[in-house]
Length: 173
Image (tube, rainbow, N blue to C red; front, top):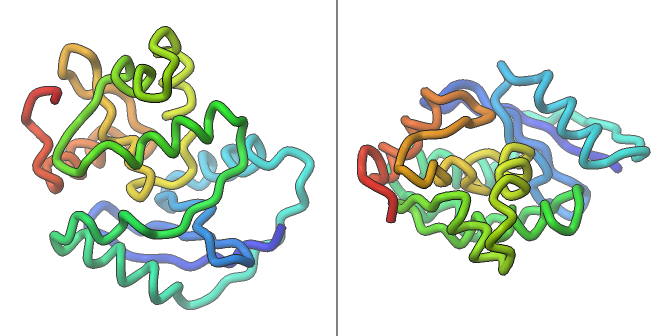
């Protein structure tokens, strides 16, 4: 698989964006989490030879991300994404896009949404393996008691993103 990579400075730090030959986003991760990115790529595409070609930018995606950070919270809603991973992981990642900006769901709500209400732990693991930060809004998932829970990009970023979207410090919807 050939991926094209570029970088973008955001209010939350520099991010790395990778797209495939069909211009689908495969990965969006902060550069200070490069080890996490490499682990995710290896787990999601086992046995797949990946070559990475660097470009200056992905203008359409960069523009959408900048509009998001400038306050257009819906700017990311229709960006094309593609995933590796298991069928279950992909179902969780697709369901994450159903959480409206400005709202949060619990792991239980997300599990119920995908039709598997007892799979809260598995949903949590899939949520933590999300390779496309912000666009697949795993930051919108919080604890059943309304508390912030772990986030691959770090808790400060999760709190920033939720506050930016108007979902923090509000309670669980």
